[in-house]
Length: 137
Image 1 (cartoon, helix red, strand yellow):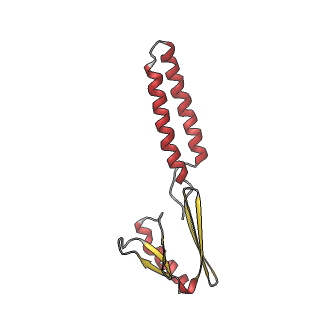
Image 2: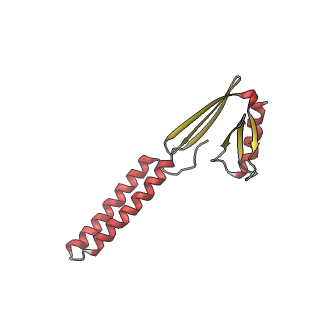
Image 3: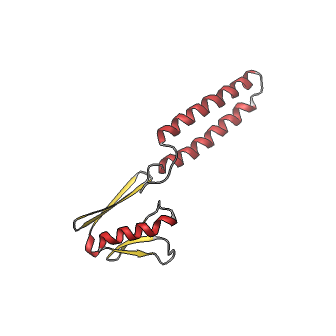
């Protein structure tokens, strides 16, 4: 399951470069006309947009991957560039609902709980739960 993102990080960089080029072109024109305050606001705008796009790009490639291979269940999650991976005996893994949010699913292996389906819409969760339950029994 992947996060639903419209732009890849590379597309974001192209977008930002075109935005920066156009804004700096307009800001430079006004600077040459003697209105220096425009270039200050242009630089402020570009800085704020750059920060917002960096936050977006950091999570654009997040994903969750659950696979059942024989007796092994492998759960892999990438969040903000950090990848965590768990490998468990599939017969001992339970699919549960978290107490604080009945729509949120989790895998339980002993005392360990891992929330899953973070990128799913609520409408897709029942089908996902049904499909995963079939592989765990």
